[in-house]
Length: 279
Length: 88
Image (cartoon, each protein chain N blue to C red):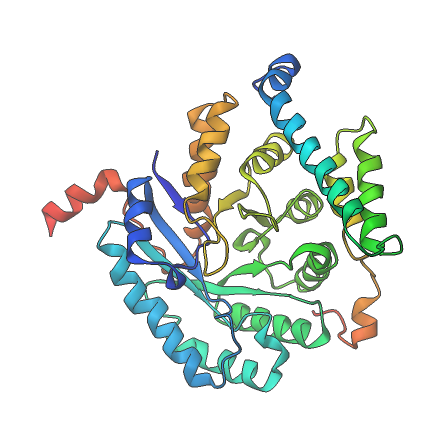
C-alpha cells in the first residue's frame, strides 16, 4: 500500500532509510523544521538548515521516487531565545515561495513557558500574514496535556486562524478529543516509549473515527523508527480493518490536508509514468 | 467505529501479550524491592500505584485516565499569569 509520512525528520536519517521507506510504499513525506540536538547560535545557521530542507533533502528523496515537502520555523526549545527567534521569523519569508514549503512548523511548546508562548503567537501571526498552513508540536510526557490545552487556547482565541488548515501533532489518548472537537487536524506519532504505539493509535482511530486523523513516524536522530507507519498498516490489517480505511488514514488524509497548501503539487504514483511520458 | 474483532477474539489475540506485560511490571517492582535505598516518598511511585488502581476499574477510557495521572494540570488562567492576552 502506498502511504505518506506527514512528519519525519529525514535530515537525521541515512540515504539507506530513504530506500527502505520507498520499498515499504512511502511515496511522499513532509519534514518539519526541528531541534538539531543543540541550540544554534545565529540566524545564518537556520538559513543553511532551511536550504538543506528545501534543496538537498528534496533531491535526496527524489532518487527513490519519494516526494519531499517541508515546514519552516524555529522550534519550541530554541524559542527560549526570543531575540534569535524573531530574527529567524523575519527570515522565513525568503523561503515561502519554494515549491517544497507547505507552511510554518513544527511550532509549539516544549516546557510551556512564557517565551515559548510568545514565539508561538508570533509564528501564528507569520502564518496568517502569509496565508500559510500550520503544523504544531505538542510537548512530551507530563507537559503534553497542559501544553496542548495552552496551544488550543492560543489558536482558538485568534479568529483569523482557519482550523481546517492546522495540524496539531503528537496527540495521545488524553489530548486527541480536545484537538478534534475544536475542528483541527490531529496527528499521532508512533514513537517508542514517549508517544503512541501502533496498537494504541489503532485504538484511537476506532474510538474517534478516521476523520482529520494522521499518523506519522517522526523518525529523527533519537530512538525512533522511520518505518513506523507501515507498522500501523499491519496493526490495522491484523485487526481486520478494511483496506479503504487504512488507505484513508495513511494516504488520503495526508493528501487532503496538504492539498490546502498553495505549494503542494503531488503526482500520485499511478500517474508518474504518464507525466514522465509527456515531458 | 465498530471494532472488527469481537471480545473473545481480542482476548485470544492479546492474552499472552497482557500476561507478558504484567510479568514485566511485576519484575520491575521486584527489582525495585531488591535494590538498596528507599523510594517510598517518591511522587512517581504514587503515580504508578494510582495508575495500577485505574487498571482495576471497568471503564472504557483507562488509557486516558492513566495519561492524566502522569500529566501536569492545566490552568485556564495561564494567559493572565503570563501577561499574554487573548488575540483578536
